Length: 196
Image (cartoon, rainbow, N blue to C red; front, top):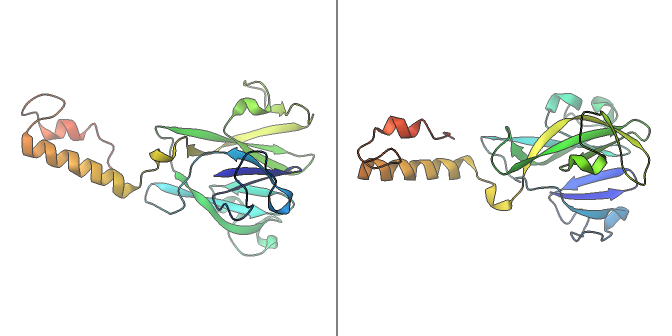
């Protein structure tokens, strides 16, 4: 998922043709400047992934809650935002090799910022308000909105995980071997797997 900025509006997308540039610092369509990759998300739904809903008004807004603004067409139905669709799919829970994406809000300019680097907005700590150096604008921390994969290789679908699980179980039952020694009970090994 690429991150772009134009003025106070931050825009996130997996569709490289929307802005047209992917190199950090390049300016693309509508004046958006590429700030790099926020993280990796799936472009297709899967059993253990949840959608990121995308909205637009004077700035863009992203949430994993379909009820926070709603998904009806038209800005009147969604607190002044127009629902634009699903931006990608992320793990429902924090997983290995995922990083949190923090959501901040700036009341003065009515914009949200999503970042995987809490220190980007100032010192990490318990202070609810941070400042972007050079901007001198206060941003309020709202929550961890979702988790993104830190590595493209780590996006597994439920089918991938189940396939790996089934292959391992098949090998264990055919050889009667496992991490607990020769002829160990299968139930002992199965309890250590996260079943997808």
